Length: 422
Image 1 (cartoon, one colour):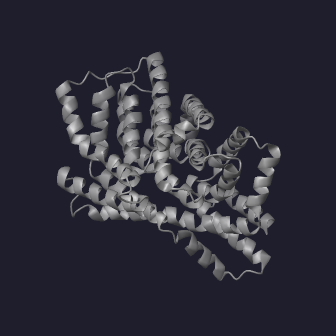
Image 2: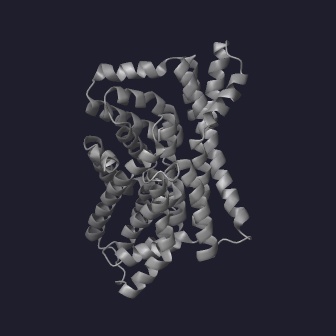
Image 3: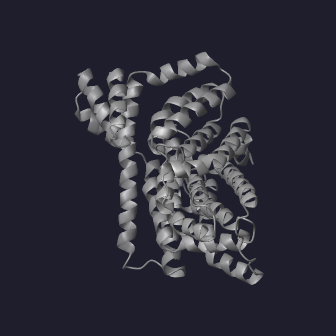
């Protein structure tokens, strides 16, 4: 059964079948070959994969992010970040990283951050003399912050799959997200000074204050979400509902960018994104169920513990595995399949589940910008009008930066758990 599952899955990947469809078809084929399980179980298990209250946060956070995107928040975040750092060498590239950090704290999606901000910032950098491969690389790697900084859809999925508090994961993602962002900014500064990239004129205190006031309603949103969760006012799922209400309020009343004429487009985009993710969750849950009934998690646990029972060695082995998986599989599917297998092993070795979750999320975030399936690279490459290989060359310094920050996260667990201990 497992042989049929693995062979058919890789065959479908080679044929270019979408990951979600390949997971569903290979699982169905494995059950047919096994013969003892009625196919109606496929539908039942797919439904069970989606029948979870915490997963309700996903469509709600997606809707909140889309509302903020249509509400004009992207341009206001860019204006504020530009007022802060635009006058430095390579300032617009720094603006890209900082704006994406702000946007990540609203949208929870890597692709959304790359597409919404890249369509504005990549052409702007190219007009000011930045190399296109550099502009595309900065935006695509900055987009990975969308799945590290809370609220993050992959963090919700990991919490559900590994039975870990989503609220604690949100708090745990703050410092790793800031650390990765700082690493990217340092890399941008070094490259920009070496190449002598353009700098904007310094913004006056008055204009800086004006940009801050215009952006303030959006900047408050992450504090409402995280403050409400950790103070116990509402759960992570309820926080998503609050985020939708708040985003709609400021986009219609304060920014006045959403009205009856475009609310249909907002809902259509949110539905399209949600349905894609939920389909992946359903079939990946089914795939994971087959692995579980065949005792694959126990075998994987035995394999890792046979290598070493040292937590650091285990984490490094997991990182290597996830870097390879991230090159070929979509992030959400990877989490749903691997988290239930790897998280119990980490717990058995004494690794904090929040720490392990952040190691897993940051590693898979790198997969968003590694060929051949780096989705952020495809989005940024389309905007920058670059081939994948051209864009990948500009990514090399940023790969080094993210890997260095990942090593820090691995060997300094307090980066992930420090805020929780306060």
